[in-house]
Image: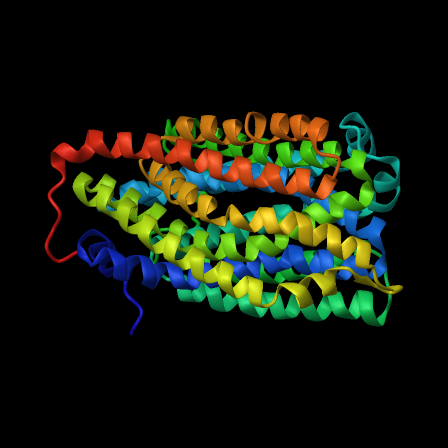
Length: 463
C-alpha cells in the first residue's frame, strides 16, 4: 500500500472502517511499543550481569527518569489533542501554529532540566534515595537526564507520524534503534565489562542519532507539522496557554504515576534491595504484553481526536468500542505467548556474572504470576484513558491516575505488608488490585461519557 498524503489519511480516519483503521495504525505502534519497552528490559538485563545491587540501582533510577520523561511526554500528548482536532477539522494553519508553540515549550522545559544537573546528589537525598544507589548511580542518572531531553524530539516526531497514520515508519526506525542500542550495550557491558554508566551512554548515543533523523523529518517543507523558527519565537497569542491548560493534567498524572512507582519501590525496600529489582523485572516482562496491547489502544487516541474535532461524535463513540474489542483480544494472545517463554526469560534476568541466582529467579516468578493477570485490566483501562484523552478530558484522566497510585496501589501495599509476610506475593497482589480496580472505574466513567454523546450517534454503514 502506498503512503497516504496527510489529507488522504485524514479522510480515511474520518470515513474508513474503524477496525481496519485501528489495526493498520495500531499494529506498527504495538510492535514499536514492545521494542520501546525492550530499552528498559535490556538495561535491566545487562545490569543483572553486573550484580543484583546494580540491577536494583538501574530499576530505581529508571523510575526517576520516567518522571522527567512524563513531564515532556505529557506536554506532547496533551498538545496533540488540540493539534489533532485542528487537523481533523481541516485547519492546516492552526495545526502548524500549535505544533511550533509546542516546540517552544519543550525547549523551555529542557533548559530547566539542564540547570538541575549540578544538584542531582542533593535532590536524590531529599527524596530519600538509598546511599548505595546514589554512590553508584549519580553519573548514570545525569546521562539519563540528557537522554530524556533528546528523546523529547523523538517523541514529538513519533506523535507527528502517528497523526498522519505513518506508523510503519515509527516501527522501522525504532527496530533499527533497538538493534543499535543492543549492540552498544553488549559491547560496553559484556565485552568491555564496564559499569552501569555505560548502559546510560548507550541510550544517550542511540537517542542522539534518532533525534538527528527526527529533526530531519520535522523540518520537511511539505508537511503541515514542520518546525518553523519564526513560529516558535512568535506564535499566536493564547496558543501556549491553551496547550499548557490541556496538557498539565496529563504531565502531572504521568509524573505522579512514575513518582508513585518510586514510592512503591521505597516501600518494597523493606523486603530488601533485591526485591526492587525483582518487581522491576516482573513489570518489564509483563510490560511486553501490556505495551503490545497499548499500541493498538494508542492508535485510537488520535483517531478519536480527529473525529471529535470534525464533529463526528457518534463515530467517536464507535471508535472507543472497537478499541475495547481489539485490545482485549490482543491482550489474551500476548499473555498466552508470554507464558510460553516465561521460564527462560526469567532465567536470563536472574543470571549475573556469578551465575544463576535461583532465589532471585523465584522472587521474580512469584510477583509475575499476579502481575500478568492484570494485563486484561490494563487493556480495558488503556482503551478508556485514550477515549478520554481524545475527547480532551485530561482532568478526569488526572484523577483516575491519582486514584490508581495513591488509592489502589500505595495504601494497598501498606495494608498487604501487615497481613502477608511474603514480599513477592504482596507486591504481585498489589499490582493486580490496582490495575484491575482502576480498569473497572475507568470503564464506568467512559460508558457514562459515551452515553452523553449518543444523541448524535448514527453508525455509518461503511464502518
